[in-house]
Image (cartoon, rainbow, N blue to C red):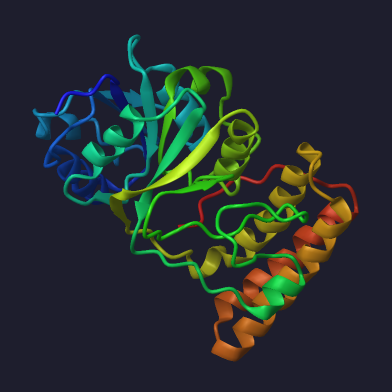
Amino acid sequence: MRFSNTLAFVVPTRNRPSDLRRMLKSVAEQSVVPDEVILVDGGDEGQTVADVPAEFPGLAIRYLRVYPPGLSKQRNAGMDAVADGITLAGYIDDDIVFEPGSIEAMLAFWEKAGRDLGGTSFNIVNNDRRRVFWIQRFFLLSSPERGTFLRSGFETPLWPVKETIWTRWLCGGATIWRRDITREVPYDEWFEGTGYLEDVDFSSRVSRRYRLAIVGEAKLLHLSYPIRKDRNYLFGTWQSINRMYFVRKHGEFSRALCYWALVGQILFHALLGLATRDTGLLARARGNAAGLVKVLTGRLERIGGIIK
């Protein structure tokens, strides 16, 4: 099937050659492949993947080295390198595996879309986040409603979906955007390191002017690594600081309700950690508390690092 749009993938990667090869193999086996793939390598010295493009002659892969790494920085650099004439460009994580026909289904959806469509997400079918605990509802951390924002500045779960739905935000590593939008709206490089909420921030800015959708038929797997045990405290700190940065940046949210939710986040992780005897969640709760103290004392500082 011929499509009127041309498609590019921007793939940030760091020190995960096996995952990257698995992802590219799933792309190469699709019924329709992207017109180009921009591979943005932030790997440490001795772990770069400059040799990987030659292993996939059926894909038009261009290699770009960005070091030191940073997810937002790598995504921006890759998007800047997309060729002229590309009409759709996506950000794809290296730990993605496309199901058969996924890219074709995505392009078919765009073929029928109006100009009010700004971005879409693939349907991540192996990551079910629909369960919402009572404490999350009480503290405005989440709700059963899909893909929207609460007044606290917290987003609600997305996938998996049984059919295409419209939403206010999209998960960054499995998305397709109108190319002209990515020229106007870059990723905010205040979000350093592995990143947390950088995709929520980006997609929420786009959603103010365009519609966003999760395409039910465009399915894939996200084989994400768990957060490292020794990084849970760092991640918890990120969760508090980055959330308040996001809320302060966007005037539609309530700072007071965000503080309420941040307190609830500490309690939620502490109680869940005690109930499951998960020391990682307890460390995350301590990090949540440390981040909240920084926020309350005016230290809304950028924090880098790798959590997986």
